[in-house]
Image (cartoon, rainbow, N blue to C red; front, side, top):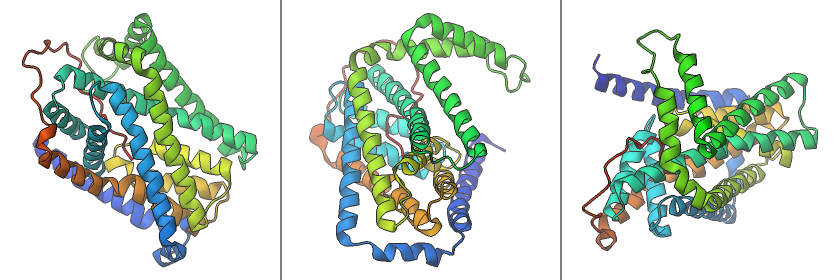
Length: 358
């Protein structure tokens, strides 16, 4: 089977998994048919939908501060377009982040940015997205502990394990960015860990060490000068998404309390990083609903709330991305040629999409 055919087959299977998870998984978890779940939407008013849409738009605008920090000279209007188009691509295709990077490169180059600057932007925003999403379980677990809302020892243990794993990953990433010596040591450790793998699956010697060195070298200057704006932009973006999640559960009657809602939102954002399906769709919704129900939330109203949130955070980004692509195509006055002479590539490839994702 050729590589292209494998990609097509995987794409079809991935979409099928997403459809099955949503179509069958949501009703199974809710213990109700689709009629019972969709009935929860009958109580929505036009003003409530307008309010939800406004919150969502503010969350999108907040993310433009992340992009403008990572790519100097980018305007907020261009950042909205870049994020919309990149998110649409990622939400439609499995492993769409790679194609999202190509789209990001095309748009940013048309606005006169150097290839190396775009690469640094993609790396920086990718790192900040992962760090932010993996940090959320810390707040979710803290909210549950403070509220006394962990119902049994098994869930407490699972939450503690997830917290420790996320904390280790976040701490390791921060350490790699802070010190080159730490990046080298961690890289050598990973190289030793993968050495026993069969030759077919084993990376080249020194793969991890060189990769982490490149990662740090490619982003350290931008992180040092713009970490404040990057962080505030991510806090604003995810914070407004959290407000949207709360509002969706409130209007559908599935709101279980603040601490439980914070924990469920944290899980939903982490699960969007599972790119087996486009944008993690299906995996995020079923996992979030399962946690809400485990924490005592009403099943059918919670299912409706989770789906309503996905409608904004995932589905609505697709037409917005199409609109953004259309605007970019028409707005010729945005275009300008990049500088003719660019520094030679130093091997820091485009490895992370610069969009917010679901």
